[in-house]
Length: 400
Ligand code: DP6
View 1 (tube, rainbow, N blue to C red):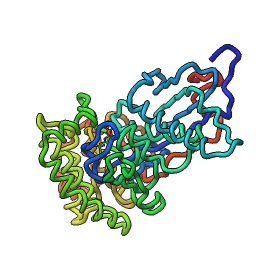
View 2 (tube, rainbow, N blue to C red; view 1 turned 180 degrees about the horizontal axis):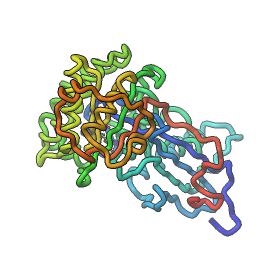
View 3 (cartoon, rainbow, N blue to C red; view 1 turned 120 degrees about the horizontal axis):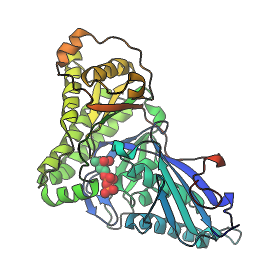
View 4 (tube, protein in one colour; view 1 turned 180 degrees about the vertical axis):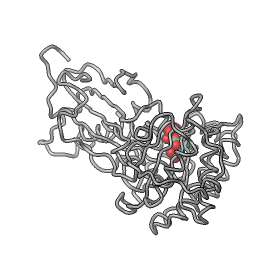
């Protein structure tokens, strides 16, 4: 900004957006540029009290260029996916201006934008941040440019999974059939209030190295895995129907079994990729065993796991099982840091673990296998932050 030139508060908006975790996984594109998937997917939006992206967008006639800062560092705005989102929002804004009467203020359209975005969780934890990031970017830009309505089709062009972060609760991304992708959109299946007993734990596993990124990983899978083709054509369509039904009925056992099977099949397609891709590590494998032995001990599916393109486990269970399950995790993965720090977002009463359960699970404890646990639940979609003190950009249009 020029000296003395300040950004009007009216031209600055701050919003937040959530992370989502797929229970029927998206893996593979039929169109790389438009980001069109080879199968539909279904996810749970996580609560923003624990995990969220915050983004401020400002416009001003004094800005010379579009600029972006991510977690405090200026990044290259020419990134094709960023450019897609900016272009599509401006396109919608122009359409709206052309349809609106003469009173409509569209000055922002001729201005450059400054974008500043931060996550409230460490990027190093390897939690998918691009979904929340692109959802937040698109939602905030839309507010700044006065664009309303369906925005998941634009978020999708930032990152496929981002389209599901445009809604709260339980969300499906319908793959669509059209060449132009206009029908490849996210849709809420049930709101976040639908299943209040459902709880989610993110077990942040210590990783030795950075895994292959989703974008390039799924490209190789589409090119080489016949299992992926089979999954997309013959398995996922039926699972989408079953999963939607399980969510609607709040049938935990059905939801949990489908979630685990779909995670396992996704990782099987990674192993079927040539050369193979490994996202699960020793810690992940032990978590899988622990969950199955826990469920077998009770003769009932009380807990489910799911894993994305990394070793962290996301656990689903019902509220009543949380204290015992967390105790068991702490017993089999003795933490480096004390209990209060180990579990974020939860205070668990220290009920002792039964000897029968320890025996039934029968794993060798693995110290420091899990760095910490984030305890959360289903939550709402993107929101506007009304308090101007929360803006990430100052009146000079630069990060505060
Ligand atoms: C394993 O959405 O990160 O998390 O569309 O290339 O940006 P791009 O990929 P991305 O892939 C997510 C893959 C997944 C499964 C899922 O979230 O459905």
